[in-house]
Image (cartoon, rainbow, N blue to C red; front, side, top):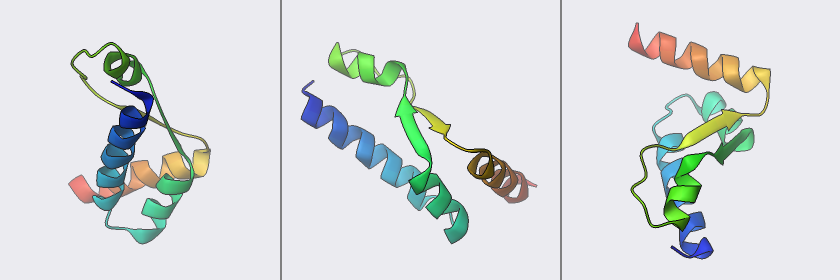
Amino acid sequence: MKIKTIKKVLKEKFDDFCKSITDEKVRKLVQQNTIITGGAIASMLLQEKVNDFDLYFTDKETTLAVARYYVKKFK
C-alpha cells in the first residue's frame, strides 16, 4: 500500500473513532492529543491484514478524560 493510501486509511479510522465520542470536550482532547502508531502501519506497508490500530494519548489530561468517559458510558 502506498504512503498516501495509508495516511488516508489512518485518517478515516481516526475520524470514525472521534465521531463515536459524544462528549465534545473529550473528542477535542482526543483530536489534539493522539498519535497513531504500531503494527497497523507496517502491516499496510507489507500488504498484510491489519489486526488493530494503536492510539496513544500524548498527555495525562486526555488519558484521564477518555478513561472517565468510557467508565461513565459503560456503567
